[in-house]
Image (cartoon, rainbow, N blue to C red; front, side, top):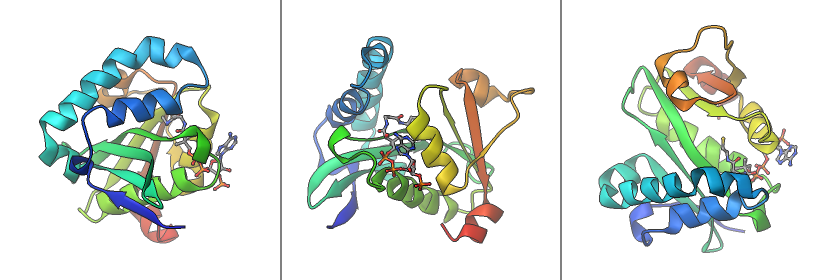
Length: 169
Ligand SMILES: CC(C)(COP(=O)(O)OP(=O)(O)OC[C@H]1O[C@@H](n2cnc3c(N)ncnc32)[C@H](O)[C@@H]1OP(=O)(O)O)[C@@H](O)C(=O)NCCC(=O)NCCS
Protein backbone atom coordinates (compact mmCIF):
# COMPACT_ATOMS: atom_id res chain seq x y z
CA UNK A 1 0.00 0.00 0.00
CA UNK A 2 1.53 3.29 -1.03
CA UNK A 3 -0.20 6.50 0.01
CA UNK A 4 1.04 9.67 -1.70
CA UNK A 5 0.11 13.32 -1.47
CA UNK A 6 0.40 14.90 -4.91
CA UNK A 7 0.28 18.34 -6.46
CA UNK A 8 -3.15 19.33 -7.75
CA UNK A 9 -1.47 20.76 -10.87
CA UNK A 10 -0.57 17.20 -11.93
CA UNK A 11 -4.27 16.58 -12.64
CA UNK A 12 -6.98 17.91 -14.96
CA UNK A 13 -9.60 20.50 -14.12
CA UNK A 14 -12.78 18.81 -12.89
CA UNK A 15 -11.07 16.30 -10.63
CA UNK A 16 -11.91 18.17 -7.41
CA UNK A 17 -15.63 18.53 -8.20
CA UNK A 18 -15.74 14.91 -9.43
CA UNK A 19 -14.20 13.69 -6.15
CA UNK A 20 -16.69 15.73 -4.10
CA UNK A 21 -19.62 14.45 -6.19
CA UNK A 22 -18.45 10.89 -5.58
CA UNK A 23 -17.73 11.34 -1.86
CA UNK A 24 -21.12 12.96 -1.19
CA UNK A 25 -23.09 10.56 -3.43
CA UNK A 26 -24.64 8.87 -0.36
CA UNK A 27 -27.27 11.65 -0.35
CA UNK A 28 -28.33 13.67 -3.43
CA UNK A 29 -29.12 16.70 -1.26
CA UNK A 30 -25.42 17.59 -1.19
CA UNK A 31 -24.88 17.73 -4.94
CA UNK A 32 -28.22 19.50 -5.39
CA UNK A 33 -27.22 22.18 -2.90
CA UNK A 34 -23.50 22.48 -3.63
CA UNK A 35 -22.78 20.92 -7.05
CA UNK A 36 -22.48 24.30 -8.83
CA UNK A 37 -20.31 25.71 -6.05
CA UNK A 38 -17.98 22.68 -6.23
CA UNK A 39 -17.51 23.32 -9.98
CA UNK A 40 -16.77 27.00 -9.31
CA UNK A 41 -14.23 26.14 -6.64
CA UNK A 42 -12.63 23.54 -8.89
CA UNK A 43 -12.30 26.22 -11.59
CA UNK A 44 -10.77 28.63 -9.07
CA UNK A 45 -8.01 26.18 -8.11
CA UNK A 46 -7.20 25.29 -11.74
CA UNK A 47 -7.11 28.99 -12.64
CA UNK A 48 -4.74 29.56 -9.68
CA UNK A 49 -2.48 26.53 -9.65
CA UNK A 50 0.09 28.23 -7.42
CA UNK A 51 -2.60 28.51 -4.72
CA UNK A 52 -3.83 24.96 -5.36
CA UNK A 53 -0.35 23.49 -4.96
CA UNK A 54 0.55 25.44 -1.84
CA UNK A 55 -2.83 25.02 -0.10
CA UNK A 56 -3.92 21.52 -0.92
CA UNK A 57 -3.10 18.16 -2.43
CA UNK A 58 -4.59 15.09 -4.02
CA UNK A 59 -4.17 11.76 -2.24
CA UNK A 60 -3.41 8.57 -4.17
CA UNK A 61 -3.26 4.97 -3.07
CA UNK A 62 -1.03 2.85 -5.33
CA UNK A 63 -1.38 5.68 -7.91
CA UNK A 64 -5.19 5.64 -7.80
CA UNK A 65 -6.75 8.98 -6.81
CA UNK A 66 -8.75 8.50 -3.59
CA UNK A 67 -9.32 12.01 -2.22
CA UNK A 68 -8.14 15.57 -1.71
CA UNK A 69 -7.95 18.36 0.83
CA UNK A 70 -7.57 22.13 0.52
CA UNK A 71 -7.24 24.96 3.04
CA UNK A 72 -7.51 28.74 3.23
CA UNK A 73 -4.10 30.18 4.19
CA UNK A 74 -4.98 33.87 4.06
CA UNK A 75 -4.82 34.40 7.83
CA UNK A 76 -1.64 32.40 8.50
CA UNK A 77 0.17 32.65 10.94
CA UNK A 78 -2.85 33.55 13.10
CA UNK A 79 -5.01 30.77 11.72
CA UNK A 80 -5.86 28.63 8.70
CA UNK A 81 -9.21 27.12 7.76
CA UNK A 82 -9.47 23.62 6.36
CA UNK A 83 -11.80 23.61 3.36
CA UNK A 84 -13.09 20.70 1.33
CA UNK A 85 -11.72 17.27 2.04
CA UNK A 86 -13.04 13.91 1.00
CA UNK A 87 -12.28 10.27 0.31
CA UNK A 88 -13.95 8.26 -2.47
CA UNK A 89 -16.62 5.80 -1.24
CA UNK A 90 -14.58 2.69 -2.14
CA UNK A 91 -11.82 3.73 0.28
CA UNK A 92 -13.83 5.31 3.11
CA UNK A 93 -13.51 3.94 6.62
CA UNK A 94 -9.95 2.63 6.15
CA UNK A 95 -8.09 5.44 7.88
CA UNK A 96 -7.13 7.41 4.75
CA UNK A 97 -9.24 10.48 5.55
CA UNK A 98 -7.45 10.79 8.87
CA UNK A 99 -3.99 10.39 7.28
CA UNK A 100 -4.89 12.97 4.63
CA UNK A 101 -6.06 15.42 7.32
CA UNK A 102 -2.95 14.80 9.46
CA UNK A 103 -0.73 15.55 6.47
CA UNK A 104 -2.59 18.83 5.89
CA UNK A 105 -2.40 19.77 9.59
CA UNK A 106 1.36 19.09 9.53
CA UNK A 107 1.91 21.22 6.43
CA UNK A 108 -0.11 24.09 7.92
CA UNK A 109 1.58 23.81 11.34
CA UNK A 110 5.03 23.91 9.71
CA UNK A 111 4.25 27.50 8.66
CA UNK A 112 4.06 28.48 12.35
CA UNK A 113 0.24 28.68 12.24
CA UNK A 114 -1.24 29.19 15.71
CA UNK A 115 -4.68 27.64 15.13
CA UNK A 116 -6.47 25.59 12.52
CA UNK A 117 -10.23 25.75 12.15
CA UNK A 118 -12.67 23.52 10.31
CA UNK A 119 -16.44 23.31 10.17
CA UNK A 120 -18.94 20.60 9.40
CA UNK A 121 -22.60 19.68 9.65
CA UNK A 122 -24.63 17.69 12.15
CA UNK A 123 -25.33 14.84 9.73
CA UNK A 124 -21.73 14.36 8.53
CA UNK A 125 -20.83 11.93 11.31
CA UNK A 126 -17.68 10.42 9.68
CA UNK A 127 -16.28 13.95 9.23
CA UNK A 128 -16.94 14.78 12.89
CA UNK A 129 -15.28 11.54 14.03
CA UNK A 130 -12.32 12.21 11.77
CA UNK A 131 -11.71 15.74 13.10
CA UNK A 132 -12.05 14.56 16.68
CA UNK A 133 -9.72 11.61 16.11
CA UNK A 134 -7.02 14.01 14.90
CA UNK A 135 -7.39 16.19 18.02
CA UNK A 136 -9.74 18.98 16.86
CA UNK A 137 -12.00 20.27 19.63
CA UNK A 138 -15.53 21.62 19.25
CA UNK A 139 -15.85 25.40 19.64
CA UNK A 140 -18.54 27.03 21.71
CA UNK A 141 -21.12 28.39 19.24
CA UNK A 142 -22.36 31.17 21.50
CA UNK A 143 -20.10 33.77 19.86
CA UNK A 144 -19.35 33.23 16.22
CA UNK A 145 -16.37 34.81 14.49
CA UNK A 146 -16.69 36.24 10.98
CA UNK A 147 -15.27 33.13 9.26
CA UNK A 148 -17.87 31.00 11.09
CA UNK A 149 -20.76 33.24 10.05
CA UNK A 150 -19.49 33.04 6.45
CA UNK A 151 -19.43 29.22 6.55
CA UNK A 152 -22.87 28.90 8.13
CA UNK A 153 -22.27 25.36 9.45
CA UNK A 154 -23.51 23.48 12.51
CA UNK A 155 -20.21 22.53 14.17
CA UNK A 156 -16.94 24.44 14.31
CA UNK A 157 -13.68 22.83 15.38
CA UNK A 158 -10.28 24.15 16.34
CA UNK A 159 -6.86 22.65 16.96
CA UNK A 160 -4.02 24.81 18.25
CA UNK A 161 -0.31 24.32 17.84
CA UNK A 162 0.14 23.15 21.46
CA UNK A 163 -2.20 20.22 20.77
CA UNK A 164 -0.55 19.55 17.41
CA UNK A 165 2.85 19.34 19.16
CA UNK A 166 1.45 17.29 22.07
CA UNK A 167 -0.03 14.63 19.80
CA UNK A 168 2.91 14.92 17.38
CA UNK A 169 0.40 14.82 14.53
C1 LIG B 1 -15.13 12.52 6.14
C2 LIG B 1 -14.26 11.58 5.30
C3 LIG B 1 -13.19 12.40 4.56
C4 LIG B 1 -13.57 10.59 6.27
O1 LIG B 1 -12.69 9.80 5.53
P1 LIG B 1 -12.46 8.26 5.87
O2 LIG B 1 -11.25 7.80 5.17
O3 LIG B 1 -13.72 7.51 5.63
O4 LIG B 1 -12.21 8.33 7.46
P2 LIG B 1 -11.20 7.44 8.29
O5 LIG B 1 -11.37 6.02 7.88
O6 LIG B 1 -9.84 8.01 8.21
O7 LIG B 1 -11.77 7.60 9.76
C5 LIG B 1 -11.40 8.69 10.59
C6 LIG B 1 -12.08 8.53 11.93
O8 LIG B 1 -13.50 8.64 11.77
C7 LIG B 1 -14.15 7.44 12.16
N1 LIG B 1 -15.17 7.15 11.15
C8 LIG B 1 -14.99 7.08 9.82
N2 LIG B 1 -16.17 6.76 9.23
C9 LIG B 1 -17.07 6.62 10.23
C10 LIG B 1 -18.46 6.31 10.25
N3 LIG B 1 -19.13 6.06 9.12
N4 LIG B 1 -19.09 6.27 11.45
C11 LIG B 1 -18.42 6.53 12.58
N5 LIG B 1 -17.09 6.84 12.63
C12 LIG B 1 -16.43 6.88 11.46
C13 LIG B 1 -13.09 6.37 12.17
O9 LIG B 1 -13.39 5.34 13.08
C14 LIG B 1 -11.85 7.15 12.55
O10 LIG B 1 -11.81 7.36 13.96
P3 LIG B 1 -10.63 6.66 14.85
O11 LIG B 1 -9.33 7.17 14.31
O12 LIG B 1 -10.95 7.17 16.22
O13 LIG B 1 -10.84 5.19 14.65
C15 LIG B 1 -15.11 10.76 4.30
O14 LIG B 1 -16.07 10.02 5.00
C16 LIG B 1 -15.83 11.61 3.26
O15 LIG B 1 -15.27 11.88 2.20
N6 LIG B 1 -17.06 12.03 3.57
C17 LIG B 1 -17.86 12.86 2.64
C18 LIG B 1 -17.29 14.25 2.52
C19 LIG B 1 -17.15 14.93 3.88
O16 LIG B 1 -17.98 14.78 4.79
N7 LIG B 1 -16.07 15.73 4.00
C20 LIG B 1 -15.82 16.52 5.18
C21 LIG B 1 -16.57 17.80 5.05
S1 LIG B 1 -16.66 18.71 6.55
